[in-house]
Image 1 (cartoon, helix red, strand yellow):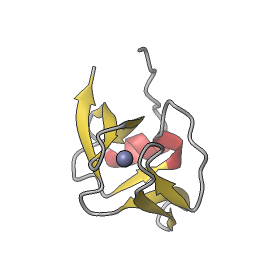
Image 2: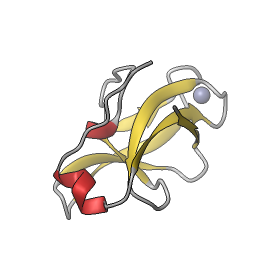
Image 3: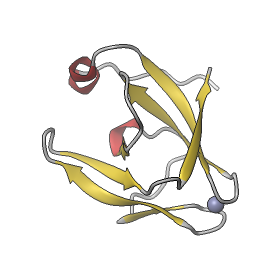
Image 4: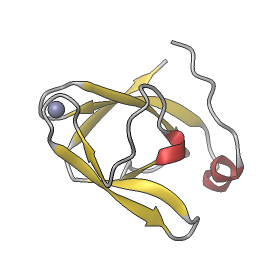
Length: 98
Ligand SMILES: [Zn+2]
């Protein structure tokens, strides 16, 4: 799958390279979506504008489409006034996608 990574002010603010992560449910291992991670650091929240396929409905809670486990809670990252999901600890697993 070809996904063109976004390059915008948020990416510039993070510095460092971006990578594409494949996000899975920790509970049932279902593939959830691809995610662009900008810069270094832990994945504590996922920004809505960085979630790639498949398109998910941006409900107030992020749930696994397979097992329905709640994975995260919608929030606004105030420093950037940017919508995100705060991930619950251990709810997802990730691997680098090429
Ligand atoms: Zn699941």
